[in-house]
Image (tube, rainbow, N blue to C red; front, side):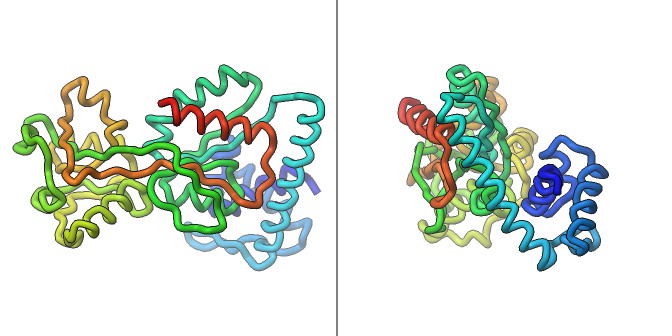
Length: 298
């Protein structure tokens, strides 16, 4: 049985999409489908139920996926132990990060890490907080860096930075000259909301509840799936929003957005998320310690 077929299958099982798996593996979709079908022929059974624009694992597929996860973890452990013995720092690490962190925090951190360990290959998967946590749970990534609270006792969660969120408006907006806004003020204007599962949306929801604001009373003009899309909609005058202050430096310099503090202040934690039981190589520990030190210094 080819390791490549099992790897392709395991990737498809992780994202439940042949198209997404093809993107992650840098393969064409027909090639991914062919590898999975070959594996199904080896087992003489279907591993996926294929519906209209949706796939799911069969019972046989769930068994194969569980064993695949164990097999690849053992491969990683074997490779890491050999490299530790020989002093070889080359290898591959897969990181998952929520959108804000991936776009505005990680580039400098990973750039400095690559300068120190040039032979290391780093793969980055970008998704909202909920999806990144799921990838950690499924052993699809080595380390997640996410926004907000994580309530999963099976995972190791360690805060790494405090992020301040602010209200953003177009510079010509009637609120632009205000020194601060209250939670209640957010209900009075069309609002551009992040999609369900996004860390920014979750922390805003908790903030409104904490201050006795009825979130159902918000005038949600639209829901968008990325920080850049939210900024573009606000710049176009379609509503106001709340984003990380780290995400709007360029727009503030260019004068295309104005930022207003919330009072009480709205803050959240950025956090590292790891599996408790997952084998950690020396290289993975090097990255984690480097990231922890970097966040402390910046």
